Image 1 (tube, helix red, strand yellow):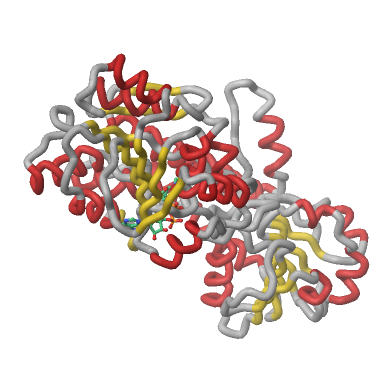
Image 2 (cartoon, rainbow, N blue to C red):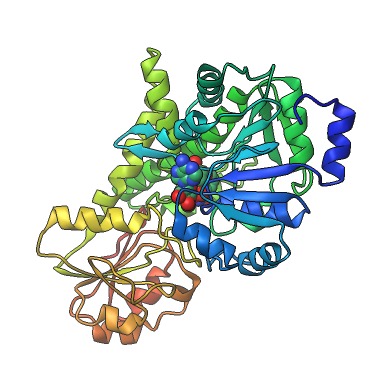
Length: 434
Ligand SMILES: NC(=O)c1ccc[n+]([C@@H]2O[C@H](COP(=O)([O-])OP(=O)(O)OC[C@H]3O[C@@H](n4cnc5c(N)ncnc54)[C@H](O)[C@@H]3O)[C@@H](O)[C@H]2O)c1
């Protein structure tokens, strides 16, 4: 389709005649493939995981917590618009949503290059990377294809970057809520990608190059990491002065140009990882991004700071998901907290409560019953602010605990209410009364 005229392309998209593939059917790729199929496109989902492919072709969603995906997937598989396969077959419009990782502090984008290396017939096709990547990865993707096939991006085939700004497990909702950023390697690539994405996205932001689009994504999350690091530093300062960080943040944010986030542990797929995508790249080019580096250090150090507040050996942690009120585990801050507690003392006996978890295999106990979790605990830590924790029976908790210490990482509990029941309250960045 890349070699067609703009008018022909517009018509082809309008009639839903574009054949699409989504490569990588994970948290991001599968909801995206189902959305495109539901728009009316003949969509192939490609994944190296054969079991996953079988499950998808049976119309069975592997991500039950992604609201609406089960029905959307079943309908589009049954009606023949969505088919999963393990074999990489280039189609007219190909979206890459394979995993990108961090090893230590270094980006690992091998899966992206594996896809580029497997492409055999790129002529007239369009490729759009959506995985989060270090700057200039899209350009390199095009070069790899050119080296193995002789065809060039921007001449023989289209190439663009369009970051996925969604958050699992609310991808279906976010896809239809957030504007889509598109950076083409040339005008035509950007045009085609924008036409296709316009079928479901509420708006398109065309940027001047794939590099700008790549950096936009990383910078959004790096900015959030910096803002949280500032709140965490503020929390440490407030502890020195014995003032409440939340009171200060709320007051400061009443000034329209001030927008400080809350302190806490940073978990999840994007915020703790994406800053490293820029850090290592610029470092290789001779510049050290000290502010970004220090923000990462401050945020990672918070787990030790919280562990330092803990007293006693038996510790109950409230919250396993990295976000409140949903079941999501990838790179949760609670694991970092557990590691910090174990590093502080091998004697720590840790039990985790989460209303969304229980019965799964972990190397620590996870329970759904909060009273079982706090039974005999010396200390209870609130790690994730699930709304279920708003209605705590502190009297009952006090009776069940062996100790009396409540550590509140999210400034979530009412300290006076906790202390009125004879317990001690320690909030991060808050005034300690005892
Ligand atoms: N999960 C999120 O909330 C989120 C949000 C925004 C951006 N992202 C980014 O989107 C990308 C995908 O993330 P995800 O959470 O969907 O990952 P995931 O691990 O859930 O899924 C990736 C899928 O790709 C498959 N895969 C791996 N190598 C492949 C290959 N060579 N060919 C075909 N399939 C392959 C895997 O089997 C897996 O099913 C990452 O770059 C991530 O940073 C994720």
